[in-house]
Length: 200
Image (cartoon, rainbow, N blue to C red; front, side, top):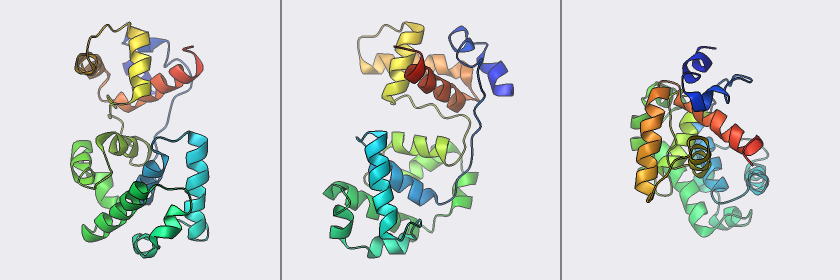
């Protein structure tokens, strides 16, 4: 796959990308994907999956329309284990997608920075959350999650990065990542995988 050939030019990544190639997919119902990201914030993957299943169970196991989410009583959403702020954020997403008439098709065609600018207007949605959406739901190949703790830990270890501040670390990470373009999403996927399976 072409992205592997490109990323192997980086000595650090060369050993990481030898294995199986990743494939990115576009997924439907971007708004619900965004809600799932909000649900999972500060939770383990396992707990997040349980709460998101409870969320879908409210709507008989199906992904809800935005109007259905807005019409769901606050206490019903609180009852599945969401904090007050997360209930507000989930309903903020629904209201924003309705008021702005946002569609999956529209988001698929937009540049990553434009999607980030649009969706971070929603209270409760930060840059990192939209970056995950760009990678895992919109299928963008060139997204670099510089704020992601896992990516930071992997790069510090892999490249033996020395830094005295968060800003210096991120500057060095961004500089290193420039040569990975236009395949930075794949680099992130391999870094996460390496951190979780190899780097102990």
